[in-house]
Length: 607
Image (cartoon, rainbow, N blue to C red; front, side):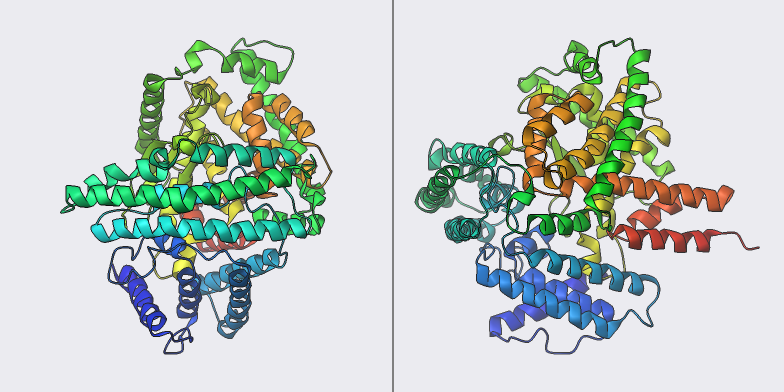
């Protein structure tokens, strides 16, 4: 409660200043590192109405000045943000690192790395594809509006309508940026444009009345106490009108632009294809792995892991009597077995959800043996929205709101239930839910005595490394597959999936592999369907380096655990080790390694 009050106090101070038009950050000089980090965090949050809503602290309160707005997507705002980052990083040196220790030293190191990483990436003005098949405002904003904006009062409903109106402005701003990218040599590959066009056309198909921004509204309005039937009808009419007048024309204009881009697009997959592409990829690798590993080193690491995991998978397939000429052929037999498939209808989808919920209950029954703190935030298991399922991954997780207004949610893609055979579901549930991302992101929100930034930092190698480490916990420490070798095969297939990513990501972006070469390699090594793999490869194309963080992070955490077990012997405490990993929030791997070293020193018995 005290932490929440402190955060609200920061927001109140800044809110008063924002209304007054005062340009200084605070009316007083921050005292101490935590206050300084809170200050720069709040300043950054205040510049993003969407971030404020995702944090979930002040929406629909007296401090809410933002929830009727969407982010500024202009080049001028981007440059303002970069300059603020530079100033924030320079100011950090006034507070350390000399003289700091414990959590304060950790805060300084983590914050410095975070700011420097953003500055490194922001130096490239035209570094990627703003609109693509899986991200950008045409994909992200609809889900933000339908899932992130919580309607719980008449005022929050009115502000939803305001945000719908803002959507048109955002689409116009981003269109200008895409045109500027084209003028500077950045045009997405032809297959990315094709998939983006499919998504945009699908979203506006059927008109405003059938659009998800409108059809999801009635149920939410019915839950608002005191809202009359007349007001509900009025709001629905207004929403339909705004979508027809602002949103659909914005999509149509973007579709026209992308159709024009398609005329000059080529088929090359790697980011090397755009100006400064090699440098952009180097920075992306550093950001996503939080290491200095080169593309060649990451590639070789992946090749070695592929060989190891393939050997273990073949052993299980042999024991289960599943024969075939290749690994992919043998796994495909399992993919098509009736006992591993849910029917691709509403009944089968409901059964899949129940299966996931039942497995999660098994995980939670064992979790207290491995963790001192079990996150109190609830976890919901829900279907990926139908309007975004075509381009969404098999499953993903969104963390709970800091104020508890929104639970953690694991989204399972049920467009085609055959894409998620039963033997792989347990590992997907562990990775995205408990004790994977749900434990990791929920635990970070519970840390006391640290600035807000430490609770929400999204270091890819740490977060995905933990989730992949959690997959192995399900076997080695939780024993959940002792009587279920096929689910253990699913675990290995998921690990192979991440190992192959090291190979194909660096293959495309550094070694000039084609999209087709990457797909062929990944299909052969995972046994997954070509449809699934194509969706994945095309994701790596538009998010260079992101897929490398998983395996690099997992291997780093496993090395840390092996070292702790070796040095501590019988004094090794698995719960304590997990506290170090989870209860300090996200951080770069090199900083996490030092935190584990410090814990080992503290944990050694007195001589």
